[in-house]
Image (cartoon, rainbow, N blue to C red; front, side, top):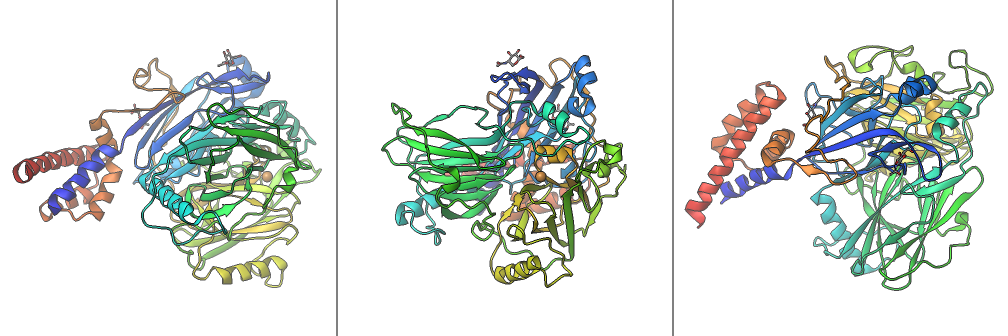
Length: 633
Ligand SMILES: *[C@@H]1O[C@H](CO)[C@@H](O)[C@H](O)[C@H]1NC(C)=O
Ligand SMILES: *[C@@H]1O[C@H](CO)[C@@H](O)[C@H](O)[C@H]1NC(C)=O
Ligand SMILES: [Cu+2]
């Protein structure tokens, strides 16, 4: 029986991981509001298609870059015409030579840019432990604001079961209080409708035009936000909710250029269960604040009554751009717009709620082996010679200075060496805002624990200055964490003239960016590059001329429609990295172990290792069937 159970498990793993083929055709277009945009698969809404996979799947994403013709190249230059795709928040395994960083999509750091007229494959396996709400976007120039972005959703059973348990809790206890603890083990399969909400700021000019302005000799870093979008729509959006849906699961993503957004579902409380791909203990709030780059999943119990207003505020220099969207059952019509002030929405807290949004699993990382402080500021009205414009600096350097002429992972270096992280150790980074604005900071290759965030005007934090207000707050926070886990995510807002301290384990070799995610600030150099462990590789994929019908275009569905799973054999070949996990956790029969062990220790190329394992698993499945036929019929 144990044997049979084990083998079913193996065969189950064999069929559950697929290869998902997607294709992104990137070209130039014109949006509904008359702006020049970058279109994805022929659509000009700047929202982008959703790419959806399961944990353990292998993604094969073919990117075809046709943004610029020869004339455009003259006009915009390489930086806007060449491209690359970053999977925001996706932390990939390092499998031998195939470092996760090779799919991180930062030109000059982890890959060569994809020139106009060329193509590139992003092929990687989504780790079993990675599940939740992500997005992808260009990491070249200001392309994502012009439309080179989309949503990346990763599904898994663990998340599904958790949602069912949270619903059981909500049904049992109502929505009183804030933190819902003691979840029942058994969930309730209530009808839940998933609603993706990508919120962004909006400008009447295209990003590339704005860039021209901000990069002019005395160009400032902050063009004013002129509007907002929901899923690429500048109008109010009417979301249709199925008659039988009892809950909606809002997957909220700020894919914007600069503004923090807020959402409020009138008359309903929001149950937060995810911060940037990390499942969190259910926490009830009234209004959600989302920094650029952040993601949340929020469960809302919907009544059957009146149409529901979704109040959407997009932060601008003074106040908010306000919009009213709707959740409508079949037959319902939208009513009056919300007229209150966004800044007065109940429970609006623009500070990071790093003590409230507690990860469901994990523990506080141990005391750091390395602590460092990064001071960032806008370099005033002094034009920096090499850049021809005012720039941001971090500890005196701009991000551009870290960028080599070549690819960092192959050993090339820029004017600045990357900042070394203590490989394998726990690292604490204080990010100090010397200027007065709030900036959303994003870390590549890691999620981090948010150990402490200052209030506006707490000032910078230096680990050797124990008497500063920042250090006092930090020490108080550290004392509070004993036995508790801080909010864990990959993007946070840092208040002006203040600081944030993030803690992470440097267990992912590579060259990783830590940068402000305001599109204009990235262009103006607001970020650093870290070096972690030995990230040198002997080969980096090169872009290639697109062949007509590359990789059997007939089989490759474009991302705007649906993904196609390839044949089971194909997926089995692709599923190699999931197999050892299953082996390790299940009680594999003794007879099979020697074979497996030799397989694991002999360094073979990934593909042939895959083949051998596949054949092995197919034999085991056949055996399983035989045993079943003999003993259980
Ligand atoms: C997008 O814009 C291009 C260029 O104007 C146009 O040819 C194309 O038809 C547009 N696509 C859609 C779906 O509107
Ligand atoms: C990526 O996957 C595609 C489709 O399976 C394959 O044709 C291509 O050779 C792969 N490329 C790389 C660089 O792995
Ligand atoms: Cu910024």
